[in-house]
Image (cartoon, rainbow, N blue to C red; front, side, top):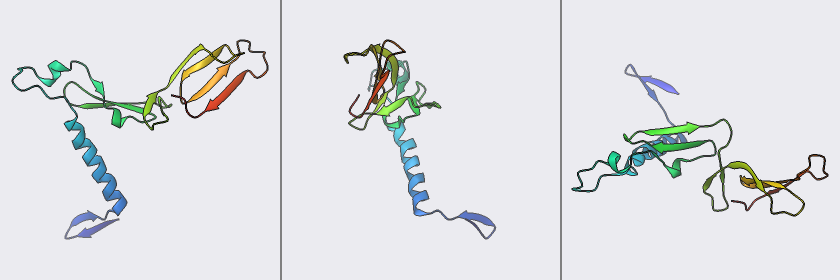
Amino acid sequence: MARLRRGVARQRWSRAQFVAQSLVLVAVLGAGLLLPVPFAGSGASAADKNPVSFEVGYLRSAFSSTYAQRDGSMKTVLSLAPVHYRDAKGGWRDIKSNLVASDREGYAWRNEEAGFKADLKGDAGAEDLVRFETGGFG
């Protein structure tokens, strides 16, 4: 809640707001430490050593990927649908929605990689058309 004191609006932050703001600040400042730096005496800049952007993995989420750009800026790509899932070790992995040959007997297709396994029969009129399994995939 804003409070007026000597003509200046002051805002009181809860402890949670302060911690959240501090973490954002640390993340933004810390991201600069992960950018490549030129080798001493090489005469080449970091941009010359890394001509393309690269993903900053610890900033990945289910709905986004963040990239460090050649010029030192950051770019985040957001999606309306999940593009990553958590694997068994807690890391984010790409969802691969391609259909590939199934290794399960009686099923023709399965999804490639998505944190769950879906096996599909080759005939749409077949009984038990789809089989789902969750956990431990990826």
